[in-house]
Length: 311
Image (cartoon, helix red, strand yellow):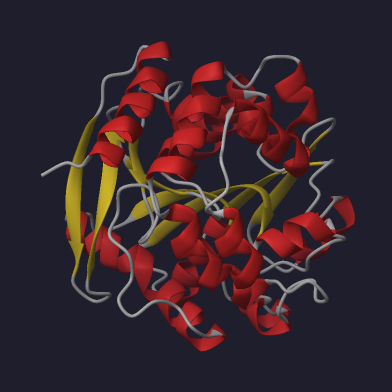
């Protein structure tokens, strides 16, 4: 039975998809190895492309981009514990737990979908899962488009507020605070989307869908434990989760990095440093763009995906 919170969240999602003129389907996928069930939303036609979102959000965060890719079979994953996917049991408690999850998640999802191999579109924390999958199961990952800074890269000077919010004690507290449109706009500005928000490029429907995700799902409460593996108030990332130069050198899949010059998690210096070790990677910097380039300019992001994956 669908509860009231899920009903309210689904209504906000439906408003967003409707505003984009998109009709999509979804299915529940059992992850045999991890032992939980996730939601995957599907739209478009063509070759399968698995989209892996960042921290404290869900597959619907890709809506503006996926809506512009009708010639791609977009598979929008809600990672375990986010959106309408079931949580991990037991939850992530350590760096070792997180690394093991990252090594298996993509393969488990593809197996559940009955897909032999797929291209990936990733961002931020999602990039960690994509790159670890490309190392653990190179035959399952064809190509990767990574938008913005990726977990696994060195972190820049992340604002203290973001470090605090990503740690378990304060993160749990924040998950219970009231959330409205103004709150979401402040959060988006904090990840480098100030210009996009102030110019109205981030739609009211997208803002309300994210607000509903925070209010009506357990996404934040489920993600704070993972956040504690990455961040602390005093430390900018756990060095054990940085992908070494040697590891990056073993990723044979072609990679396209689309990096905002204003990404607060890591600017051009970190982008060049991270991408340089990949044997088959290209890197594009977008001026005036923050951590989520497809939210700044969905049309340009769609061109990047189409050029790299379809041409």
